[in-house]
Length: 327
Image 1 (cartoon, rainbow, N blue to C red):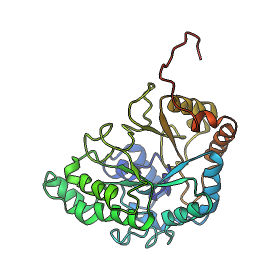
Image 2: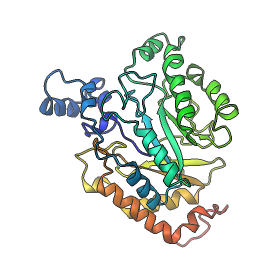
Image 3: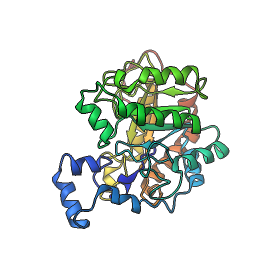
């Protein structure tokens, strides 16, 4: 997963920066803003500093290929609502109108399809937005209205599918309302029966409160999901190299990142139980994948060059832990 957005500008704490600062009023976030930014600075002001000047989709594609990845998931919109593509439904709050003036998701999608066609392109999309007035009004109405869904969420999803044709749709931000509010079944029925990707697309399980681990092409269940036993349904362990954050944070120490041993252990545990491993990286505001993250991906790829058959061309053994020998 590529967790990249305006939170990559302050690059402090984690990708929930805006919420922690403005809603939770977490003391460390409040102090950070008071010490580093002028009074009355708003979260929207970060957009001007989201430059992406070193963003090189071709280099990213080469790195993902070197890591052994078979699919990617790009965060097109996190809970802050800023879209990483020029959405017609996010006026002046997208990467073309403000910030880098680029279609960040589109640039990577087109590059990967032309240079690494064996890697499936996926997209992450948050159903809800923390501070969107339409969403807050629906929430205040106990979700008996759905103006936000009909005017923002669903149009964005249709736009992403029609314009970019992702093969994985990784939904998130669903937990505050049931699937009937999100009109999830309407969208999914169109996706699997009428959309341009109806024969190839897969989706995760976050389509409304109570749907996790219940409905989806594959299950996430929760972040860093690693059940440790064989599952009857296809599942995914979405996890981070930084133990504390999905987005990039400047204050991270080297010890905050998984070692290659930890990463390979997680891979082995996941694959042996029939899951996929989705490794998250958090690029910087200027479009670089931090060296320690790049190193881990390349180390993983080197290991897979030797041992990949045990990952890609094998299936889990039905009898697990059937030995008394440790390891």
